Image 1 (cartoon, rainbow, N blue to C red):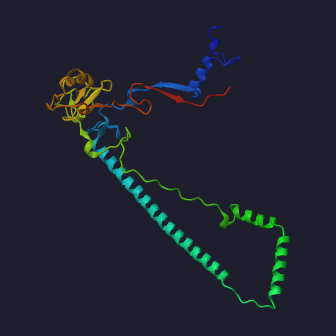
Image 2 (image 1 turned 30 degrees about the vertical axis):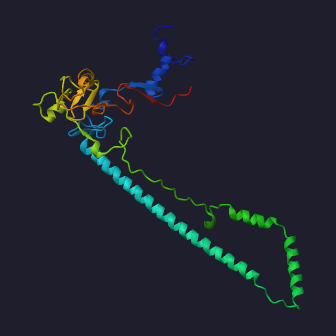
Image 3 (image 1 turned 60 degrees about the vertical axis):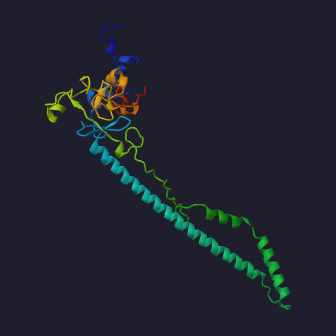
Length: 304
């Protein structure tokens, strides 16, 4: 093959190089893309607003939120639950009233059946001059009715039972869907577990330079440090929050220093294993934990 043979498009074989060239030009096939830094949520950003937190709070599961954003979310969910509960109660009342109407109609039908059965028991005076004629007329009627074909009656009943889209009385109707009783528990948007306002823990980040203003601090790539070791915090550094003080420390500091005596180095309070909350690192819709940063985009395959 010559040096320019790979660019030849007159061959009988669709080569791999041509396929890649057409894929890049027309957008067919599957592409594996390495996600950049802009696609990753920073460790100090809110999981709802995706912006750096002004007043950060953390859940017992380790998800960081802006206090105003998570409180608005909880209040919105409570109003939605109240609306669903109101609709459920309205449906329940409608079902109760319909059951009462059905019970009244059944009772009325029972009374009518009782009256008809009681009326048939009452004896009627017999006229000896017309009794024979009545019997003959009844027998002739029964013979005439037995001689008629039964297919006509069955066809009429079948035609009435079938639905029709042209006759309003026979048009099939869709019944309203029954609502299930909604749960009154507000769930965390990230973990899906129940969340309460009194369980939110205030987080206190230690800035890298206390003299810097907030605007100057947010413009820096490295903003916060560990409260104990003064190591710089980032997306690649596992962090934890201490419940009593709300201080953010590195996981290495927790393993090597704090877990030895289980004492908060900032306030001096005694700690338990539940008081050390691992801070969830920023992830994306493509990678759950922020470690695997590759995304695959499937496109229609070109048919040869």
